Every structure is written in C-alpha cells, then in structure tokens.
Image 1 (cartoon, rainbow, N blue to C red):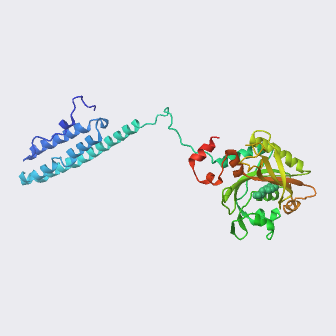
Image 2: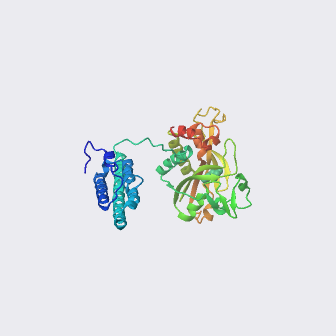
Image 3: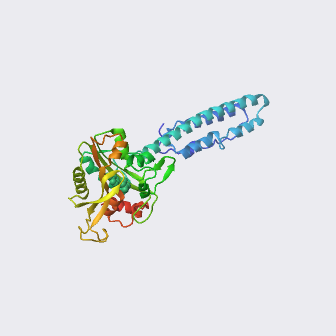
Length: 370
Ligand code: DAH
C-alpha cells in the first residue's frame, strides 16, 4: 500500500482511546482494533518508512508503548472464570504482533539498505581520481637504460644470485683464497663459502658453466662491498657483459664498447682504454670516456683530467675459460663491467652518491623526469 499524501504515521500509531476493559467482549473489541491498526501500518510499503519510523512502529506495537501489558494487568478486574480466556487472547495477539512487526521492521531495514546502495552506486563514466603512481629509482632506471643498447647489440640479458658462493665470486674468476686481488674488494662474508657478491662478474662464471659456448650475455644487478664515502655506498649496481666465441679479439671488444657508449650518450664519444689489472682478464684495461661536460679540456666533474673512469674490461683470462669448462685453445672472449651508479651520477650531475640512497622522493621524482 502506498501512503496517501496526507498520511501521518503518528495517526496510525496513536494509542487506543480506551486503555482498559473489564469484560471479555470489551477486551475482544480492543484486541481487534489493535490488530487492525497494526495491520494498517504494516501494509504500508517498507520503502515509504525511514529506519527511525520503523523503530517507532516496533516500540508502539511490541515495545514500551504497547497497551498489551496494561491489558494483562487489567485482568484482575475480570470475573475469575473469564480471566484465563482473556489472558490467552491477549498473549495470542502479542505473539501475532511480534511476528508481524518483526518481519515488517526487517523489510524496512532491507529497503533502506537497498536505497543506500543505489545512492552510492559507482558511476563508471566519472573520471578516476589521479593515481599517485611511483616511479623507478633513478639508478634502476639507468640500469635498464644501459641494458637496452646491449639488447640491440645482440646480448641476452640474464640474472644471477646476489647471495653467492665464494667459488663464483672468486675462484672461478681466477681469484684463489690467498690471492692479493681479494684485497681489492672489502667483502661481506655471510657464512662459510657464502658471500654477498662483490661484483656482477660472478654472473660470468654462471653463464659459462650453465649455458656453455658461444655466449653473448649481459646483466645488471646489485653488488655489495663494505665501504661508504662520497663516491662509494655498500650496496651499488653494476652492469656486466661477456662474449665468448671462436676468434674473439680486442678489436671486437673495442667496437662493442664504442657502439655501446655511443648509444648511452646519444652520440659517438671518445673512449680511452688504459692498461690495468684484473685477475679474470688478460690483458685488462680501465675504460675511460671523454668528459661530456668539458669535452676533454678539463673541468670539476672530471677532476681536470678530461676523462671519466667507467669500469674495467679485457679479454677473458684463459684460466677463467678453463675453470668454467671452456677449451681456451678453441674459444676466446671479452668482458667488461662498470658501476651503474657512477654512470647515473655523471648522467644526472650528482656530486654525492649517497644522496641517491636517502629515500628522498622529491629527488627521485626530479631525476626520473630527466
Ligand atoms: N668486476 C670488476 C669490478 O668490480 C669490473 C670488471 C673489470 C668487470 C673487468 C669485467 C672486466 O667484466 O672484464 O671492479
């Protein structure tokens, strides 16, 4: 039943005029009226009542405001032989009303809930609030950018463990236990035979032993050393390349480096290979790139040398090839490795490497834009 416009709940909930009865017939009339009133109220469609109003209905017919309790009390004015009958009639109506009203109140609640959900309905055509997405850390971004030209040069990008066996980090790379080259890196020893890799060169040993020849692989990843100052942090990233095939020479290495750095800097850059020592390469060299700030004339960022040191390279030491199961009479190779953080520093013009690792979101966001 829809509510008539002039409907007033309070009219329907009004208490009966006669609050007491003294005979069975009088009582029967009161009970019938009460039942009718209730029937009228719960015939109203639940969606026409608020939850508060449905509460009023409950209080009026089954709670505090119900006259049933008074009527039960008035039974003492009844002739003794009618009392039992009268009491039974009242209780009968009571349980009837309780059942009906309970059902009605639940229906009111359900329809109020339905209404609320409808009002809150999601409008799929509304524009989304702006999402606050983060960005890659500048050094992670730099690492990925460095791998791109290598992919184009035909390198397969691989991964290796950061928690590494001493064998892969040292022995396989021609750095036996008592070798002074172990002094070059302040290693985190984690457990017997286990280290946090000090360089990504350990991935070279994995690649040779697990993939075999010919090989053209690159990897970028975290490396760990116990050091901390303006230009060193204990956790840093390196990028590593390895090529092993028949007839590989320094000329292949040089042309790969030239092509790689040209792509990294977006134009051909001057490279200088400076003779050096690494146990895993022979001959070995440091890779210097001409300073892109002063183009060789000397400035603060290249410490007035005109060159920036990028990493190391060389022809893979035959001992390394042999200890990784490769016949060094048939195969030769070259490798190079460098610090991604260093490249990011020179790319972003950062003076203190540590500022990259202070978790400063503003700095990261600013660098990500470049
Ligand atoms: N692993 C060396 C370092 O951490 C860098 C390096 C030098 C890597 C020469 C190479 C290489 O692959 O051939 O200092």
